[in-house]
Length: 343
Image 1 (spheres, helix red, strand yellow):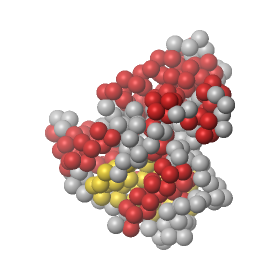
Image 2 (cartoon, one colour; image 1 turned 90 degrees about the horizontal axis):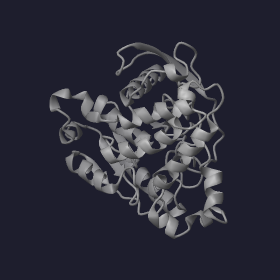
Image 3 (cartoon, one colour; image 1 turned 90 degrees about the vertical axis):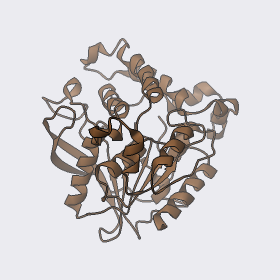
């Protein structure tokens, strides 16, 4: 899978781990969670938190925003915290957790669980309020959740190709790669002892077309990346996506994303949930995103009290939001995020 952004000029910091007994929102049990994270810059500066996305790592999470040419989150001005999702292979995940929570025994984790764990880390680090919370894809969904769950915690949030609630269309798309994985010959009903290479390869190939757009294929954009043909591109970028149980753990979290869960008295009314948000919200969908289309973002912004919509005009589909579109796409994101940080 492509990384979430390509710029990198800073030396990678050491990965640290925060341990916390987390009360899980789905099972209502206590889980000994471990959160993988980076910190960059001086802790006395305003804090900006960047969460990982589906298939993302600490290393490839939005580096174009804080490293390299055009970076707008300077470590000289901001205290940058990068956090790994539960199930993302760096924080507690099926692939790295000991019994009795290993592999298929790993509990379901929600966006609420992730946000509560990140909030606990921030308290541990002495960060009482975030200047901004910025996320792409599942990271963008986490941005909505932090604003809904802790209304006074993040002054600003930036949603890059994400949504406040996973749509039924999005949920259904995820059922495709999931089915390819769990029906593979090496899945063994989840009791595998060797990497599920055929299953994760099938998962990635089903996923790949949805990540881009019809226009991307018409314009043969793989050639911009130096590939002679489409099969070469797919082989290089979409031949596997990590541990099978980790993929399904994250997928479950994604499919169950819904900020209305925090106010059951609203009976699933998304407009009411959005209207409760106090943070200033910058919503940046990609024009050709097939997961989180701009029409959904437009509807969300209608109900947010302090929000702006800025559409990334790109043929690079969902990937444009994470810095994997054109240089022009990335500069547009940098300009808008930089402006938002100053408002």
